[in-house]
Length: 396
Image (tube, rainbow, N blue to C red):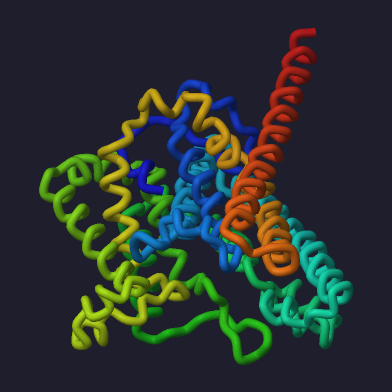
């Protein structure tokens, strides 16, 4: 998220590592805060016809929670594995990165099986095939053997599961990128930008399943956000500090955020429907999420500048108990994301079959977030217990 663009010597922990308590020193809690916020937003956005998702950042500009999540993932991966690269060498560090990618792959397959079982049970029990269509599970119900093989190849992904395969691919290809970032940081970032630029003009992507589909998050485009995060995590944020804190950059960022807010508002509010002239619309539309449109990337950068200016690394509120739930969710991002996928479909089911009132929508939103916080609290407690046990064993 934007926060890591500030110059800082803190060392955030990659999701594979055991998270330290939120009050631990030497840790940029903004990373966990905004990653947790991104997970909450992803859950809310995955619940259709839900008034709760109107508070998410996708309704206030061109970018959304995905940019936050991918950037922070790249930033923390570079910080953690960059240190390991210095200490353990290329082969050992590459093996650790690939092991983490394998763990994510196993989590994806487990999530896929349980998620499809959840959808299939609801479809069969309530005799409503629309759930299968809405959640992208028709192919699985029609030919489960083929669909399972395609899922193993990361080509078949039901609704709401696209982020995890993207992260798997980005992390699995990270070892050579990390090595290059450590030696030729600017050249590596430039190569990443050129690959992203080629996607914008040539439109290539990875094939999906069924055969007429492509990856929703094009990894050839989204690698730019991940590599940019890695570049910032390995010292790029220090070099950008003067630029980020320049008054002119702040003014331009605020103006861009205001302009994007006006454009997005025109999509939903009839009085602003003609705000974007057709000639301008032909240039800026579509604002592709699949290929990480330049307008989305610039919106993320503008938001980053403003957040860095508003929230310094030692901001007192980061240690308030009120923000601890967000930070805990951010420290257990994989488990919380997977849990959120289950909860989003459960909330969708309740809103369709029980009640779809605004009160119920808010109840499902709050309940889902509360359950995600509960899971992160249990995982944090277990991590502390394991650390204490290890400390006692070492002392004894």
